[in-house]
Image 1 (tube, one colour):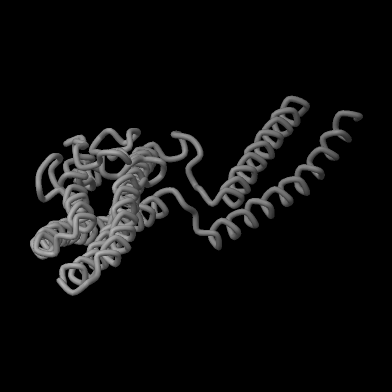
Image 2: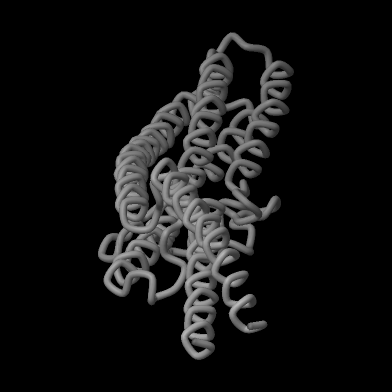
Length: 296
């Protein structure tokens, strides 16, 4: 009889431990919202969960790259607008100065504003995004243009790419010479402004009329680069939307594998708690009977 009582007590304690462990497990699931905490919980599911987590991490990196690229391109888009405005203003001034009836002193006044417009273009050429110079290729830590002789400065020809998928890289950079003209050439925008200044200070209206054509050439080159920036921006926006959709799909798949149904967990937890309370109640009666038998 005593051996039987001891076996009953041992089995009772084992059952209580099992019930208590189940309750703790369901409490963890309810607290974390995850049904898999270790490989033993679901050996097959943990494999899918790790795969989805890996894909999500990689997609997040691609999304960050796409957003960084969009930041580059949006900044460059604004700079192209500023450059275009500078050239428009310069054209108006040169057109006025090309009129033979303008007094010489007025041309010198126009030259002062043209000088300011040139310095504004140099500042645009040395613009940065997130601390990196935009128009010096891969040499993002070096300003592409000097203040003294920007028309002779050669910019780095390297191209910056952003990886937006395992097999796709999108170029996001344009060099200064693509936008402002090749260094040392007659249609380099900084050289054009130097020529305009020389013709204004020398009171050469006929030469100023020729400078208008060069301004138009510079404006056309900037417009072409502007269009390229717009095309790349559109592409990256499509890529960004695709990656965001992919992340949502992966999150849904991961939730189906690893997340719990809160209502189901609450029901299971309540059932386990009821079983534990019933086990404790029954066990208490068994223990009392066993103690009486022992005393006898």
